[in-house]
Length: 430
Figure 1 (cartoon, rainbow, N blue to C red):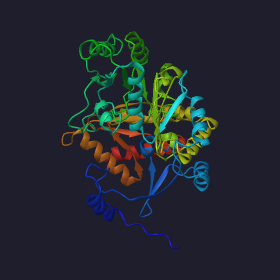
Figure 2 (cartoon, helix red, strand yellow):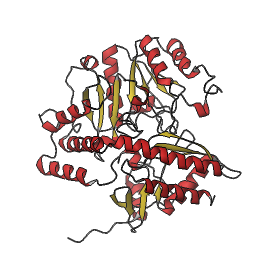
Figure 3 (cartoon, rainbow, N blue to C red):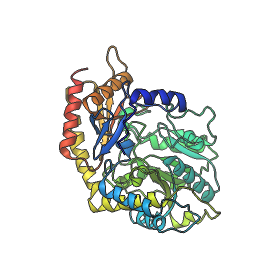
Figure 4 (cartoon, helix red, strand yellow):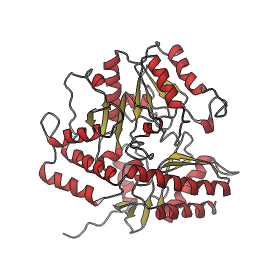
């Protein structure tokens, strides 16, 4: 059978406008049709190659179409493609067992679903069942999903499109030292960002919230990295108020930040961990995991039609095997250090860059505006020109002015330095 010719971006846009709900947006004024991927690269319908430095928003930790992963997925598809959790299958329990071997502390029991949004919904339900409480705290500028509750937990105007959010959720300032909401300087601030959490508990809630949702590093919030003391102090505060700590590791998990989980950077063990993205290797997955004690609170029958299905579970098992075998978390730490150093060199040369921050291969480059362009407009211009040069980046932040670098953990140092050189060339054209 002859290979089907791609319809092209113009035809896709016609169908998109006709058949998709208008909220389904895309990057770029002149958007390509992506038709194929291999490793760190994707190709468009015209045969042009792009280096994918966003990894499907932190999904493709192994890069596109990693051969061992593809083989595991195809073998399972040929054997048993789908059956739900109401029947016994081996892959789901094997993946849960493998996850227990990498999750922090005594977190060892898992419920599988199909997305990070579902995972956070499930974590909220579990926290309510365990504590008997129904209020939550979350960070301003955080992102926790597209569902009703997920949007309500989200603290970003761009993504919080629900005009009638769920009640009982209080947002507190994140630990964002470069943009301290209290106008303080790190070292002299007395951690007012932690004190603000206690103030919120005692003045904006019943005094007994169930839990606090946190992203260890805020992804869509602009790659916000907390100071090292923040999470230990927050954990102590939440323990005092008998609140659970829920770590949303959907973007940060599985080596992205240079550790298996980002909370490992501060030796903090959350009560509940949510995740997904990279674990599925491009197949839809989400999960929430917890301790034996907390899991015991959830006993009424529960199921997920696609959660932990055989294909996704085998993909997760193979991914975890490769992640540990090839020391990809350690590789991420090394490559991320090299990338940040190079980008910081560019910051010294170009006033348009105001900050470079991140951990591992989760790096944000904050962009300022100029006399005729706002920061967001300048970011869009850079994004478009990088795409034209063959490099795909992300953009995040409350002001949509943080260029986001989240390349595959399998990237080569030379590839990242090549991308940084292309970035410098684009900056020189502004």
